[in-house]
Length: 516
Image 1 (tube, rainbow, N blue to C red):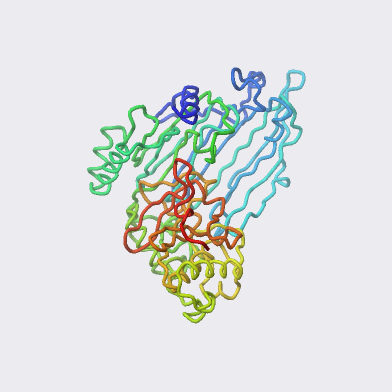
Image 2: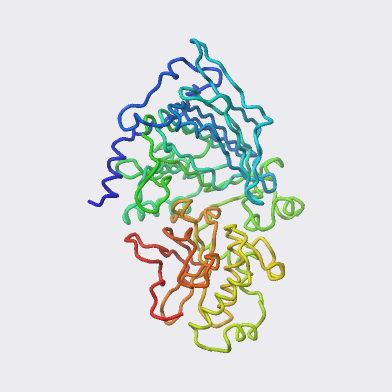
């Protein structure tokens, strides 16, 4: 048994099995109810030296005309190392008012002479920090924090999330005594809710789950609901229940985990969050005539929403029909829509300067290895990466050529465009950068990808290229590409490839036989 498998098995023995419940109106934590017993909490065993402990992390997701994320987190600081948890950052999307806080409050609680004293975080000290044109974060620091203090914060975020909701992680780097999430699904929607406890499906399990998904696509909604109700909405589960999928419609689901050890490090290059028990939420279907107030939410399901934005679509009379029918796409449909997208597939059809430019860059050589290397060097030297990973180009092709600065999508789609014009077989490869964990491979989740690189083929050898690597060496990838999988977007034979094999071999095609 490998060291990694041994480590994982030890971890699993320490985790308390989750409790799956139906309706439960009693909250595990309330703002005005803090007991003196909570100030006496001290983890034992392997967590006895922990810097802090999560007393309770309680979340609720409710989907209506917005998705409302509510969260209440309470942490006890145990020693001076735990003071770093007194600074909190909450990321949220700001483009087109995608996310808006409807409530946010935070405070420090200390015990003095048997009395609990509260110190609030003033609203004026909650700072909005812009990350890029899409993302920001709300940042604040708790006052009067010292070992033995309790900090807690509570917020509600109104979001335009609809297809792919935020992942809930039950575990974190410090011990967690109680983690609970509730999820309310109203009548118009059917969501696939996946519980995964550090569990990758074996090939036969993936095949069995694939059959269940196909049944979802092939069965009419009414019959599907009847059949699922007989099995408590459970669509698929592995034998030991470490991987479970429900298909929820007009239901509430409560899932609780208790006494989870802290986990701050795992061997290898994988993000530690990949080893945390988690819940993911993906919209399978929605249909019906919905109120006008639902329009901003429904706009996010449009294939060109990411490139057009809410403002443009809200003023397009044809953007939203009266009757809404959303269905999770198949991989072939997903692939086809990408090739038709103005800021993806259409980028490959533009003319970046014609054959004369290509011949000039390659010094009129017809050797495909030289043409590939010189075109790659030309793009790296003449087009500056702005530091943003993106699946779609945010500028028109012509504007990008003028500005010569853009996201990973713009730079690498241009690279692919020029390689194709040079007579080299090249296609886009969608990537989920390794800091975000493994991508979902069973069905297409549009927003899971945040990057695109190139996959080229010369003399039967496949080579991966990323012009954001900061070097003209075609053998080098951006470090965020390594350790994940990519989806090749092309008309024939699209599909998955490993960018880094499980055995730790170099990326596909990097050890090639030719000199560049």
